[in-house]
Length: 381
Image (cartoon, rainbow, N blue to C red; front, top):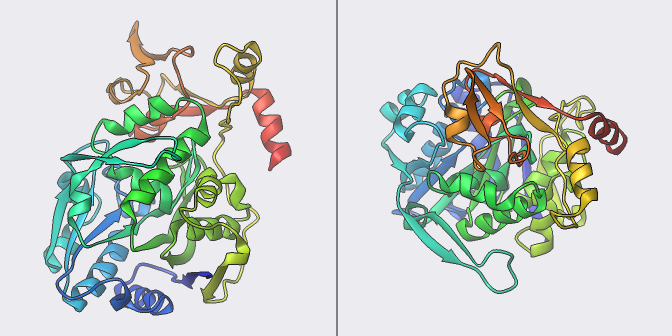
């Protein structure tokens, strides 16, 4: 049975045009009543990485979230917005990211993720247990609302990656540390979380996307698209192709397909919607990163050589750094500390998870790629 992915053009975030686009997207997939019933409790999960204005393209635009919330409310369901931002509490992030008007206009509740519940997996999964936000499982329906952004570790953050936000607080850092430098291990964590959360629908905000060194320090780019599907793996794979890349570059697509969490097989995906002129893109800027999947021991000297000369690493620009300590406080392997008035990264401890780059509000963390990594990246891409 084929999976349907709907793609629609939307030039801006004006409410009238956005409401029409959301309605059309939903109708392409069977209508809102296919996912939500009267009386249902519905959780909307946007990308709320940090406090940021909508035009920075860091968070899911509040206008899109409002359009989806309105469609759900029209069915007679209740709506909550939930996330667990790594910086700041949810209410503050929502307020500073332009969500106040939405919360004033519509009867939408705020649902910060605070409590944890341990979910178990079968023996064939790499991880047998993951602690997720208990609040997520108290709803009848989850609608996943990611932002189309690049990501220095995972290449892109789309539908599957967005649900990493269902981990509570510092648990995110713990899983980064557990995965280490192996991108496939981290991708597996993300896919297993997606399997358990099971969003009924994923709608991606690609009207104003982010290219370059996202998800925090990239460059906003207008793409004018919104996509939706019941299968986030399928939607993510289609987005990859729209920006000019094969879905195999996104390891959550590869592993999600392999584990049966979704499909990235083009033969199993039917794309419906508007004719997208100008796509696929041939100039969408990808992150300057080269993460590696290792099939050798930590003690293998070849691995140590390749890691030193291939893997992209973060570097702190002392001329910009305000020494606020956010990078050190949120570094999973505790590789950052202040030495002689400067924030320094211990290369022996660093796992290139780029949490420091992701969370730095001053854009003081740069992405540095060794020469060998640059050469191989250009050859592969």
